[in-house]
Image: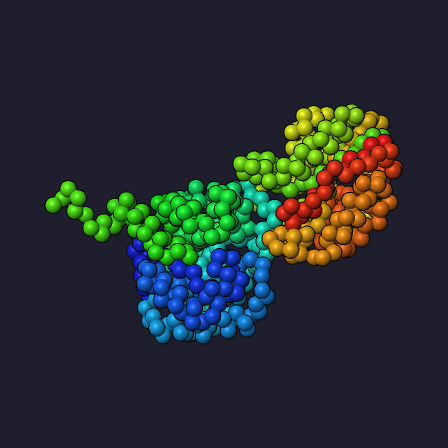
Length: 286
Length: 209
């Protein structure tokens, strides 16, 4: 059982986490939802398209505009309050590595802290514990936030991702985060080259076998782009292929830009697995 | 005695199997293999000189004992078919100019015809966007200074490189390059490749005596 906010999800449920960037410079949407009204419209569309949760971010993952704590809070906390007011039952996640930001957004009703930089600020765990929030443990090999990967090398990237995320999850439990509110994320492309991200996808079942629910963030990333030699605006097909493979191997939450397409892929995988009946099946049955 | 030296870059992309279907560093590779084969052809041994790993965005995870510079050097020798005896010599990435020069001088005392394969990456702050390090407008100038020293066969100019600036500019090969400040001026010197296709300065050069 996975608990996010007030909601509990069965072990076979496949969840879509819609990306909502309150940034000017994120690699895919390039500021499209920086303005609050545009971001709120994005949340409405995502929910209508089948998103189970939204992931609100105030800082681009890679190098870009400097965003200090105060500015990150300005971008995220009031917006969390706005979304919470309009969608009382929606699971709200915030993508941040900073404890001060975590405290501000949880105070406004955020349910999940998506620590995309893998425990860089240990105080974030305490915040999650204090607010009873869920927490996402990502693998970044100790990288500095927003620094691009350079010549990173692993004997076994899957083993490294498992060791670090499981250790972080256990640290979270020790800090007081509830066991059923933790997810692990191999963090494709974070401190990884394309070969690493492909191998993590191919061997995701090993991560699933840890027993911790696995979140994957694949959407339009560079490993898809390099694999298919396609620019950022042409990676949806590759993303969905990786989504299907990851779902088949047992990933539970999928952080995505394209909510409707991701939802369709996950529903299809669930039906192939025999865990979701077809929406309508009349052929040869009437 | 040192009879020849080659300078080559050492990104992970020099492992051909990592670059994907189309070689992203084809030119740098071709120039490197030519240089390596040429210096090996006139020598009885090849010594690979490389700095310890520097400016990696996170520590290497695993058992690989040698720095990337040495591993790439060895691979270039194998790919060039230059199967000579020799050894690998690691210098600390942050070693001072004097230490590097001393190491260079020590190679002159060897009693066989020695070729040096010096692994020397330049600044990782060359790209305005998308490089490993934040763009620094001084990076191209620093790299050009190294390229001029290599092209003109000027050991003293390599010895005079600004160590602190090199560190600021993420010049992973600075200490390795300064090993060449401890050898005599060569009879011939040429730079056959110099570019920063992915934000890191790569240079291929050859000195002979």
